[in-house]
Every structure is written in structure tokens, then in C-alpha cells.
Amino acid sequence: MLPKFKRQSSGFTLIEVLVVVVIVAILAAISVPIYIQYVQGARASDAQATIGAIYNSVKMYLQDYGVDPTSVEELEEGEYLEMDEGTLRQWTFTLIGSDPVSQIEGISTSEMKGGAGHVVLFDVETGKFSGYGLPSDEDI
Image 1 (cartoon, one colour):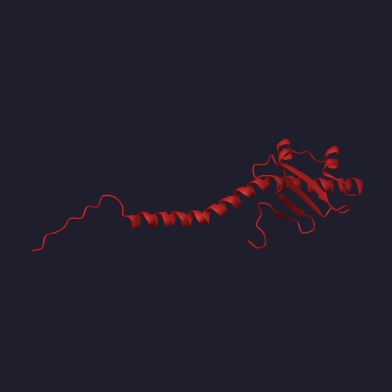
Image 2 (tube, one colour):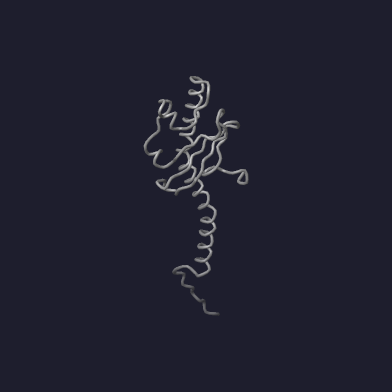
């Protein structure tokens, strides 16, 4: 009879460890971009909510005066709009177009954790947002 060899199975082989590392790397490569887009969307949601309030204020101003306001500051001075201090530190808002306002733009400042210069744009005609934290036409 041939002697039976006992195999000691304490621990993992190099191949098993490499397979696990490759699987984890693939999962990370898939999930990290999705997570980053989620975080950007969360940061941009503050600007979207404020732009919605600005748009409603523009409509109220138009009803009262018959013309569109020329700036967001004009809405604030006329008490049509009140913005949160935290939002004002992180974003600056601009009305684009005059009589009628065609777009409302929010640009991030250096106070925002995501960095300065990110743009969220609301098109009044289509009622759609575009820019930072939002899926583009290429992503869909």
C-alpha cells in the first residue's frame, strides 16, 4: 500500500488571497464613482432648493411690479427672499437674462467642502437643472 499524505490546511494559499483582492478591487472600482456622484448630488441639493426659492420669489416680484428683478439682492432687499447664512457662505446666485429671467445660476464658493467654482444652472424655460452633482445627458 502507498502511504497516505496528510495535507495541512492551515491558512490561505496565495491564489486564494489574490482572488479576494481582485474581487475587492473590482467592487471598489464600481462603487467609488457612484459614491462620489452621490456626494456631489447631496452638496448640490442645497443650491437646487435655494434656486427653487429664488424662482418663486422672481414670480412673486413679477406679479407685484410687472417686470422681472435684476438681481438676487433686489429680491432680498424687497423681502421676497430670505436665504440661510450657511447657503450664502457656500453659494453665490445670479439671475441670467432680463425681462424675462431665462436662467438662475448658483456657483460654489471656497467655503463649500466640494471646492469653489462648481455651477448649478436652472433653465426657466424647460424647468430643468444642470451642472454640478447632476447627471448629464452623456450619463443617461
